[in-house]
Image (cartoon, rainbow, N blue to C red):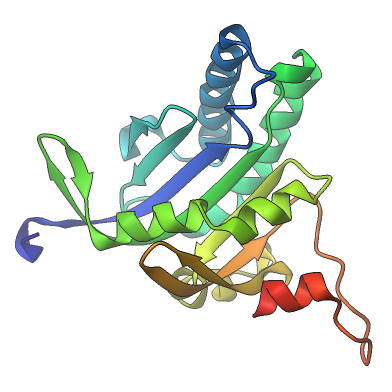
Length: 212
């Protein structure tokens, strides 16, 4: 990748939990995909992120968004997740059980290169590793909430910790090891905050795994 031909983008990955569940028929999967796009577009609009300020790439059971620098990154963490949760609730309230949705959300930023096939770059690869992190899947799987989000350590340090409205103290650090990637990241449950251990209490095994 030639640095001079690359551009900076915020990278947002959204993925449906258990999209390929054998219980889901193709009719259910279609309803889930349609719901996913409606949910995402509604949340983006309500967060003040206009369609002309991002590109969208279909990932089958998810969506890749590349957001222009004109959009303040704080909107992706203090507005977008809560709007996403509200839109999921609306979708689920009117959907059959197997068409209901829970989502994983990964957010990062960096240089990307557009070519005739799509987009590439180390930051894009990193975002895909974040969304595939086993600990993120486990956190959502054990939560009663609808959304689990993860951001890279750099994104947390550059953006999240400086935005009080993003509730940076509700993010917890975790090591992510996927394929050739081994890095630190930060996880948050926007609609089901982590139960923090009391001072002096022993952290249980789940917390030990999360923080290891």
